[in-house]
Length: 245
Image: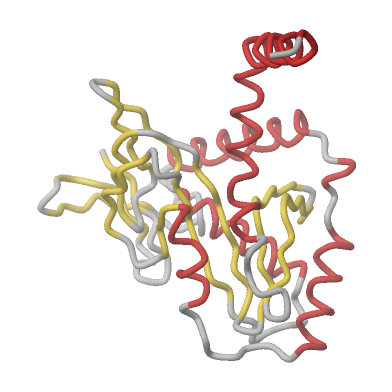
């Protein structure tokens, strides 16, 4: 082995040792983008990392796929361990060895993304939106949902399962251009976005303290199920907000 190759290998190992955490993070973030690249480009238009502003609030969407068959809105989660939760649960649980961590239900999170997207595309009243939550193969998904919750290696087949044509080519192009033109990612202030999220969380907690539904403003009532007591909105089934107590 020549001296130049040996030095190059040593430099690569040093570089990997210093930056391996950042490199792994970047690879994880780009995995879904890399998978979506293999969709048929004549049928699917992929837009990654979208930031929309609606009513003064910013919403960051991981991936949008505008297709002949509707608009796929994709939220990615790079979690390990067991993933437990339900369609309407407010929080899901990650179980990793003996540690349990709660995180906000990504289905609800993605519904917020879809609402923002609908506001951006408000003239397309009959547009079909398909929510997909994607976990890496490091996770063990144990959830009960109607919404698509899949592993990353299942993403392409999941998208291709939808075959009912919903958009004409001209509409698909116009929608893609509208989303791209509305994308604020280049001027996106992450700190402001985090502050906005904290304000929304505080507003939600204030509503619950006042016994009001944070989603629709209706009254919260105490209900019982086989899993125990919970708070539910009195506007059910129109509003499906629940909170375990």
